[in-house]
View 1 (tube, one colour):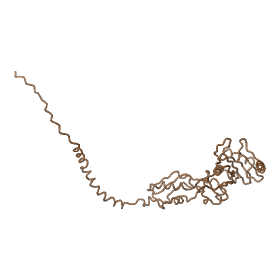
View 2 (cartoon, helix red, strand yellow):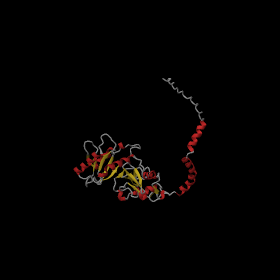
View 3 (cartoon, helix red, strand yellow):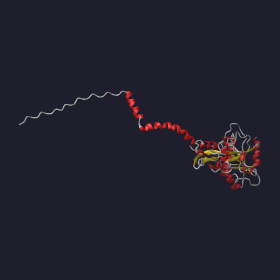
View 4 (cartoon, helix red, strand yellow):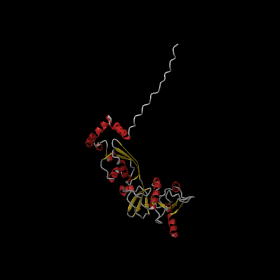
Length: 320
């Protein structure tokens, strides 16, 4: 038998000492080299001077898109909500001229829509600019809400049109025939407090305009000619304090009462008052029938009353 083999012992090799750590400056230098000294980055850096030299030339010769026909906007390319009678048909030209806008605009101009909106908002006939939208070929669609005449205020200095809120409309836009189409309001002693598109400035005018608007659909059929406004009670009079009368073609008087929307307790609604007038016509004939004139009071809650106008005036005179 041979001698037993000795076990093999594998000793671990001694560990080498770690290399010294680089300094912070060394790290920063290597990072800078890695960042800038790359082919793509070096190419970009080289192109910067070229860009600076070429950019002004390119900008100078860049085509002016605003001058291209497809982007140029004329007044004829501005389409508004079809204006009803008697709103002037040249409203676009008037609005553009009022705003002192250029004759030709560009749809690329970011200020175009705000400028057009402001121009139309200043038009006395425009109650609200609802929406504007532009597109190509160059055009702008403008959705408008218009002010519509409700009554003509008759004063010594002339006749002035107002809408249902007592806003003054341009008198020059109405012919004599147009003026006769609307209820006439008498008894107003004040004048408009501003230019067309502004409020008249008197509560009585607002009340009369509201009454006229409520009667618009039935005005001619009922044979009415005018609305008599009450004399001003004070400078701070409220709609709730005003009582209006209607005049017919034969001189009869209808005591209408307060204007719509006051919410006064016991005041009949517009529908109830119109219902009473139509019932009167069914029972007694037209309000403007030839013959004696009457005072027709539709305000009482139970039933309307009728009496000869001469008696009513005599009673009022006696009370005074």
